[in-house]
Amino acid sequence: MKKILVLMLAGSALFSCQTSKVQIAVSNDLPQSRNREIVEVPMKKIPKTLRNPEEIVLTDAQGKALSFQKTYDNKLIFLANVPGYGVSKYTLAKGTPEKFPNMAQGRQYPERLDDMAWENDLMGFRAYGPALQKTGEKSFGYDLFIKRGTEFPVLDTLYAKELDHVTRQRSRDLKKTNPEESLRLWRSISYHYDRGHGLDCYSVGPTLGAGVTALMVGDSIVYPYCYKEYEILDNGPLRFTVKLTFNPENYEGQEVVEQRLISLDVGSNLNKSEILYKGLKKEAPIATGFVMHDSPQRIYANKGMRILSYTDPTNTADKSNGEIFLGAVFPKKVKVFKKIYFSASKAKKIKAYGHVVAENEYKPNKVFTYYFGAGWTKANMPNQQAWIDYLKGFEQRIDSPLKVSVQR
Image 1 (cartoon, rainbow, N blue to C red):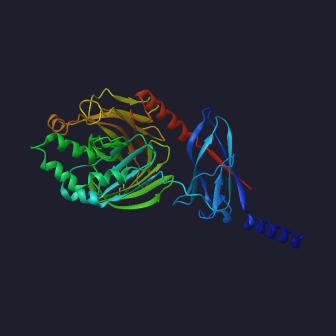
Image 2: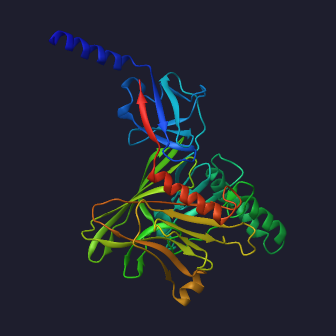
Image 3: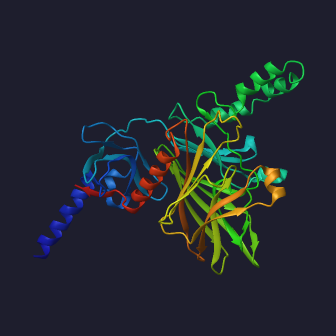
């Protein structure tokens, strides 16, 4: 009997070692279809023979090859399409993978004061770095690069043009003698002007910008400054992940170091953000929110206390750049939504009313998770209702993630 058992186990191990193909079934518990949504498969569920991303191919039910990625935390991810209450099947097999374009990527831009900027097929974002902090400029929050007209990366091109110092100097030289030519030259290089693929028309300054989380003392926000160090953990083709570490700050007599893990997937308008405050020894209030550049009436906060949105007019007075919709979705109910107004002098100086925030209690040694991002009227969000519907759908999707099973 022992010999039979040994032989059975050996045969099972041999089968595992020789597995050249598995089927991945993805099921959807929601009534609505899930299109172009990232699926995560833990690598430990995949046979060892199919774990090398350079030696495998992934195909859908029609045999079409799909892009995939092995992430830093040992997962296989890919984009799935699953009908409501349905199941879609994919095949992972030995083979030589096709080359697919990188649709989610980012890097530090030391040539632009250490910006950390990243993008996917829909949006671009940036966090400000140590070189900017050394200048004394106060820019605390996330900035936006809103995209349209392309699903491919644009940030390298935007930065290269923005930093064309020769053309910029020519524009300055002509400002008095030939203002029209000066303006034409500036528009040909500036990433604050839309040449067809989007631009930066969002103002940050000394605020939370487009969705930063910060500690609070009473109703006062303790603004984080620029990141100190970074580590890029994933860089496409389907997910970008970066870890940002900040300088130590004195908070209520405690030396606290903030660490952020930010990831952005293809097909998503929202980033996932995981916050850890190292050195914090007791619970503390935190605020996640957006600067209000326009009327405080342009806020949406749902009754379920998990979605916050603000409609931003962009920094173009004539509205030619449309509107930006900012949003945050929380896995759990927040404590309260509220507005925190600037003093009259500060509001006048930075041209903003204050912040709308979601307040929570941060628990020591725990990770605080939320999702933040934006949409644009000139891209895939034609109006505020479309954006709110998107945020509500996103909330449903994080509550009911696609389920995965690996079948040999």
